[in-house]
Amino acid sequence: MKKTKTKKDFREEREKTLSLKQDNLNKINAELSNPSGMSHGEMKKLLQGVRVFKAKIKELDKRIGDEKT
Image (cartoon, rainbow, N blue to C red):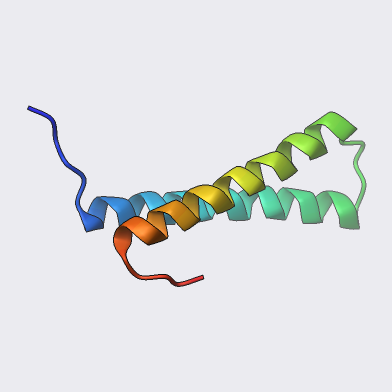
């Protein structure tokens, strides 16, 4: 039998996604303030991850039913 996700499950998934997005933003900010030699590809991958997380968060907000952003 297929388990359906509840609002609580969606909220937990949203919180995990927010933390992953914030981790990526922190890495980007750290690199911008103190360049350590991160390659262009690595920076591009982090920025793409942020975009994906934003889209996923938006979708989860719609499923939860309370637009917070």
